[in-house]
Image (cartoon, rainbow, N blue to C red; front, side):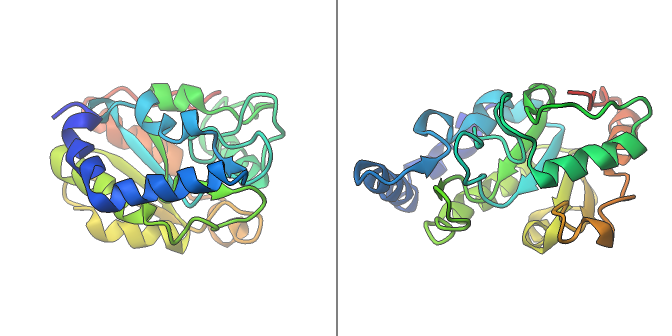
Length: 219
């Protein structure tokens, strides 16, 4: 199984999934701004094909500020200021990965193209209102995404930051995959153990131990 269509095509035909799309469509048609733009909602899947996934980084829901979200968790469009959580991710990378230079942008497309699935557990949000689509049903879908990756692939690295992401660890077989957990990189919690977690070097060591190319984390 190599494609998202094979892995979750049937899931997208289910009534609950069609209901999610209808709820989002209804808000857009009512003139409510929803992020990311419609064309970008499934960008994570478009950029990182099922058979190419090496690392999964789980986010919660998309950024809700203007122009930020483009369908890749934690990433923002190139011209947008780097959000605080990503600033902290870069700080950790600078201490964890030798030679990493902190970039002036927050565009993580380069990670996604190498096999880092940047997956939010909820794929849409109302402008200016965090978690506003948390009850739409997206998590049933993204839970199935995680289940399929767990079942059909092996030697993946899952980075689960914060309690919300860590709940998804229940679906993951730790004998087949590497599961790395830490507090969320948000300024509210990063100092509780996200800083110093060394997830990025651990991920690369695991990939190389299984004969896979490491990730070039520099963006």
